[in-house]
Length: 323
Image (cartoon, rainbow, N blue to C red; front, side, top):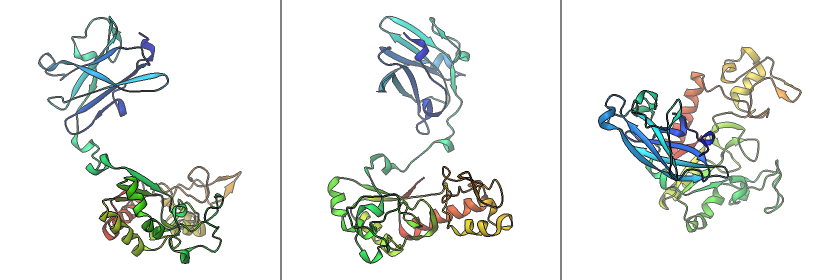
């Protein structure tokens, strides 16, 4: 067996709490190399009475590797573990420090999952596990209300450009819900719908207002309600990593520099704000000057964004946010 290809680390997606009682373990090996893998698990303080060998299953492969997985329910929400690798009749035990031919009887050399802290367990809403999402880029989906079209709107079906507009809006989505239902979807994820200058709306100007090109809060509420009648959940895009250059707090920083009360809402590397050699003097999405990065460690920014998220959930009834 090719031991150089075997990989595991006791963290991230290789060893994690699936729920409040269950731990998932994963291990990587050369594709087609191992015929069976076992996890050697037990409680570090009651090893002799809790140790067990758990078969792992091959859950996926890519061009180079196989990925093995198993789950275990430790009696005391903590775990010591190693692995037994098998290639036909060849067997090798894997601990945190080495590969060895003999079964490790002392758990001290094994990997460890210290404790399942319930507050650390990621618990998405139950409905998400069965959700079939349809992603909608509103400007390009359907034009349901031509009165909202921007002045420079292009004929529908024309060649899409980075800065072109075709007049897609929320009414266009409402008009095509029969089509979406027939596809069998039960959730819609909208790319940004709040006021912005671009067609993609990732340069948010006002987090509290639907972009007039798409409609208004009343139209959004109608859309959410009719979706719910059909059993369709609605998620909005929370563009909380960065705002837009026309976002009022950023405009204030542009005008007042270091004297602005919002200067710490962003990552400013140098005043005044400027662009040199195509690189802004403030952190952005990529190096895009239209999208200044928000300082989400700032308590005021945190409070503002949480209030935004709460508002659209309570007032409009959306089902969640894509971060």
